[in-house]
Image (cartoon, rainbow, N blue to C red; front, side, top):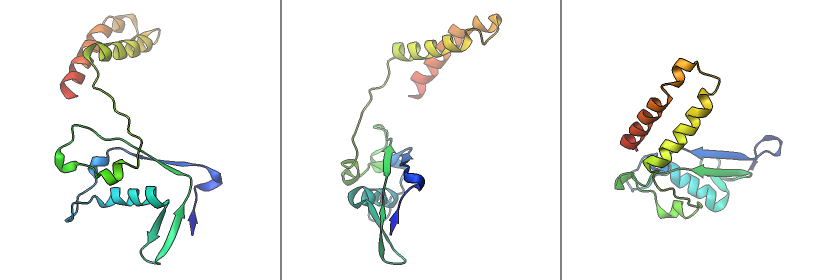
Amino acid sequence: MRLIPPCNNKLVCYIEDVHMGQIDAYGDQTAIEAIRDYLTAQAWLSSRKRRLRRIENVSFFACLSTSAPETAAVSPRVLHRFNLITLDPFTADTVQLIFSTIMDTAVTGAWPSSAKAFSKTIVSALVDISQRVF
């Protein structure tokens, strides 16, 4: 049996946090292992009908944090199926530039002049919060 997104479209599955898969008694993350099975064979075995289901035109996009606890480690069997891209944490100057650009764009013409005076204060607060959280 073949499963394909309708109208010859491609399906992109986004996994918010690969670390979130619940770990079973054997130390596996069952949901993540199912994704690994697909990435390995482009198919899943139907447990009820004992048939191989071919799945076409599907891509996976996943995110994970390098600061996750060791107990949430993702199996190398899964990770080697993905192309990994890492980003270094942003410096305060980079965050300041990002939020300033967004704020300048947002307040230009859209906000009353009385609110524009607070844009630098808002950006400073956002930078402070991002440095504390991230």
